[in-house]
Structures are given as C-alpha cells and as structure tokens.
Image (cartoon, rainbow, N blue to C red; front, side, top):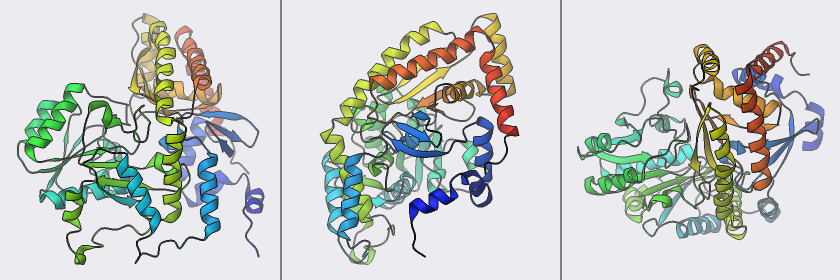
Length: 462
C-alpha cells in the first residue's frame, strides 16, 4: 500500500478532536471546546488561517511567534523543496556538514563581535538547557539567577528558571542552585550577584508572560553588575529575536552585549524546528576544551539539514523583505491605532510592548456599574476579563489572540511580522466593538456564557 498524504487527510478529516482526546491531550481538547476554539483548520497563508468551512481567521498568535514570516512563505517553501530534491546527506553525525557552518556564520554575523560560536538545538528550551550547562562549566559557579514571571521553556532545566508556579507544581525537585529575583529590581539583583557565585543571569528583554518591560536604567545596571561580578549575561531571544521588537535582537534596544544569546521560533521559517545557543569563543571553548570532550554536549537532530535550510532561507528573507523595519512600522501603527481606545474605555488601561509583541492591559474601572461587573467577574476567576476579550475577538471577528498568562488581565498580540496597516485597522475596529459592549452593558459576559454553554453541550465531532 502506497502512502499518500492527501488521501489520508481526506479519509480521516474531522477526527482531529477524537484522536487528540484518545491518544494525545484530552484536557487540551476540553479547553478548546469550552472556549469554542475547536475549529478544523485546513490551510494557512500569510497572516491568516482557513477552516474547512472556508472561514478566514486573522492569526495574531502566530504559533507563539514561530510564523514571523507568515504561513507558507514561498522563499522558505522553495528552499525546502530544493533541499529534498537534492537528497542531501543528512545527520551523518561523524561529519562537519556545510549547511550548519553556513548558518552559524550567518547568525554570528548578525550579532555583536563578542559572539563567535553556535550550538544548534531543536527548540528554545533546549537552547536554554545548553546555556545553563555552558555557563556553569565555563564559570565553575553553581548558581543561576532568573526573574519572576519568566518563561524559558518546560524541560527540567528551563522549568527551573520558570517564574510561573503553575508550570512547576507537582514535578518534584528541580535543578538546584536556581534563584528568582523580581524583574526590574536592581537592588534585589545586586544582592544576589555580590555573592560572586552566580554563573549566569538569564533574562528576557520583554517577558512573554505578561508582556512585561523593565526600565533603561535597569538594563544599564544589569550590564554593569554582570561585568563587575563575573556573571555571564544570558538573553533569551527565543520569542523576541529576529525582528519581533523592531530590531533584529531585542537587546539592541538597550545597547546590551550578552555573553550568551538563545534563539528559536522565527528561525524555523514556520517549517522545521530549530534553535541555537550563541556565545563567545571563550565560553564555548572551555566546554569543548579537548578532543575527548568533542561531544560532551550534543543534540541528535540539532544540525538537521532541513532545519539549516529553513533557517538560512528565513534569515535571507528577513534581509530581502526588510522584515525588521516592517515590524517596527506596524508596531508603531498599532500603538497609534490603539491609543484612542485607551482614552475611550475605562477598562482599557495600557498598551505596552515593542514592535509586534504587544500587551493590552485591562483593569478595574472607576464608574459604579462597570466596577460592579468587574468585581463579579474577578470574583469568579482572577483574570477572567481578558478571556472575555479573547473569546469575542475570535467568535465575532475571527481573530486568534491569547491571554498573556494565567490570572492576569493582559491580552497578548503576536502578529506575523509581515502584517501591515490592513491587519492593524481590522484589529482596532474589532477591539473597539468588543470593548463597546463590555462598557455599555453585560452583553460581553452573556455572549461568553452562551459560548461556554454551547461548547459544553456540543457533541464529539465525527
């Protein structure tokens, strides 16, 4: 029997949720059905997803930032077809293949001169794991410092640097020597670093959970304190890297020169998982210090030729299509378009972020009627209002967004970096409509309640 993908999909179309319930994650299926997000997507193109009914959805989730170039970018797709047709000798392992060298060269060329080496991985979490190991070995120090609300991945080492307690609960003892400090608190950071036993400080420039930013003064102090105390500065650019913030690297906004940089997500072009940990030759060569240690840290699929091709094509496209500046311009358009809504609606407190990582911050209103409804919702579940925004944006306007974290009233936007003024205008009008209902009456709450009820009663898709 010959395998034919199109025939398989056609024959089994519509079994998605049954299969996931039976063989994968039934709790995720319950969440999707409860929220009414259980769609059957059949195609992605650019900034949009299409379901089997032909409905189009504006994708402001972008695979958690994976689809920086949008879905199905023709340059990346063509490069991968070409690579498959060439039958490249993949994963020989005892080999030094050309493409990993070319990608490492291209990445190093796009960083500051203190970065000279790359280690390739399959994900951002795996890149963080490498950063932890390399920092500890290179410095011979035991401790790693991270910030509250941080998210660096969910493998054991990365989880040990996770500021979200909901992710850590029940998994037992994590990596020893990992300590949390408040994000943006210079004094707390200084107290930890002055012990001179910290191998690395691991930070996101903009925290993905909550879209939190720190001050210019904080980042200047971070750089100075790390230099003073011999601590390696690790900047996690897994979500913010490659143009997301309107600069190629988010740390460039603050003039930082990290000792270690991690990147993933957008580097894949949306096709093949890939991540990288980049560092100085000094750090790298301390780990790989002699021939006997040539494979002391490795990843079986890390130098996968198809991943290298996707990443090289992605970097070239970022250059050719001026993606970084496009993200900056569109981000400014979002800020300009959303500012009047902050003035218009009591519940809408702030827009924060840089480029195309944007947090919409909601909070308690001042007027009596709105305040009562707010307290009712927050009493039912902290952070519920942000979900009451995400739901109608999806159901009424077919815009896919996400709540920025558990128990917080922040909606996060991660549009593809190819999004433009058309997508900005559509989103601003949609948000205006949703917030108008929230302020005028309880229609928003009732609408979401109906969605929950319908989803709970919905039969299993056949």
